[in-house]
Image 1: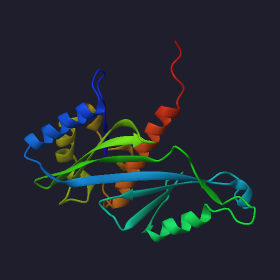
Image 2: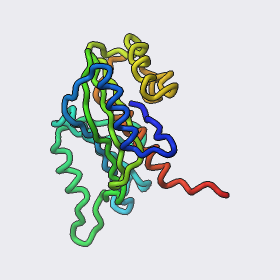
Image 3: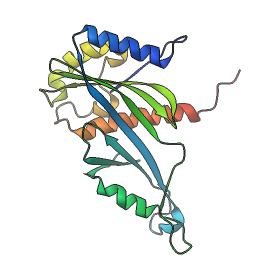
Length: 212
């Protein structure tokens, strides 16, 4: 998963339209829409006596795996469960008998990548517009090579395709994958890449403007 820059003077939609035309000229066909979303919860320390520091849990969904819920802590630990986990989180965010809830949802932190899904040969390409609290923040491109689950064995092919879309930023694998080139790739690896980008978009919004 790589971020695609939006050149000055162009809108995000113009860049997305250009990318879609580019992959369609490669012979790619549309295969529906996709969505990856993330909501963030933080613990209320006064109700967690053993760990007074604040804990953060990110809950993500991927339309490619509609029956799964991905929960990621700040340390990068990930739990894959069914959607019933959301019922547990909803109970943990409910206040009881005058006490504050164990967790609360961070307001304005919901972020998602949504867009068109394409198939071309053995590749799946997803071009997503990222929105944070309903405001456009950037573009993410996901490329999957279906016959292979070991990064080292297919990276050169993926790099060639990615560089035609995002340039030299795809010279090396995403940071999340650099230390696991020979391990079996799983859906959790995709989720961790999206979360890494989502956090970068959030930081860009909260960063103070440059001094003049």
